[in-house]
Image 1 (cartoon, rainbow, N blue to C red):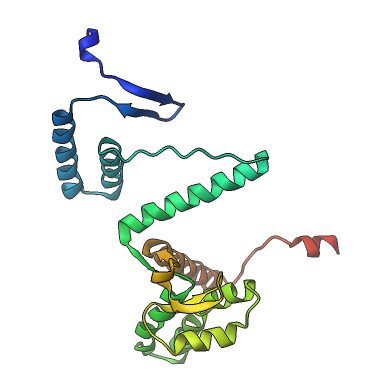
Image 2: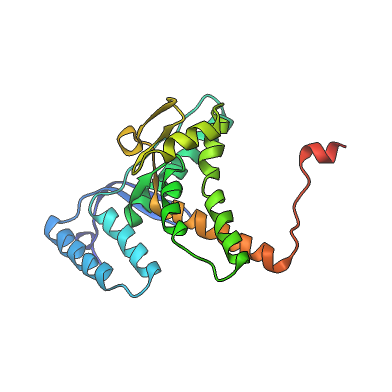
Length: 220
């Protein structure tokens, strides 16, 4: 191997898990050929892991690497900022995978339309359907409560309308949440609902739940 076999980059960052090349100076034709090859691999990937890794490789080769520098007056503030940025990055990845929908709990409210069409085989199943319908209201109720509003009034106003219409708790305004920039990745909303249903089913089958004492209870 000689120097002619090696490439160049403006900066290389290496840690115990990853190596990142920033400002690479590879040959454009070879890079484009490799990008096309990876795109074909993504289309034929047999499992989610291979597809995800190929998408990451494609993003890096296509120039999708960004450097976000986080700074703050204190270490605590810096960690909080870093955590928020990481959450935003994960949300962006989820949005790329499955798209977006209205935030503020509205997507779950609109999903109630499909559940209302269900009819249980017995009274217990009917009760379960009603529980789910009520549970889907809770995210919006909690958001409004945290913002100091009346959840019942806001819920009634949102249910009077359809589609992306909802309540922006930050500005205390009603309107099209997508136009306002209030949105959630569909994958996040879906996973939250599926996980909640899974936990509820586990509690029902186990007939018991163990939880830690709150700080107030421990102080008594």
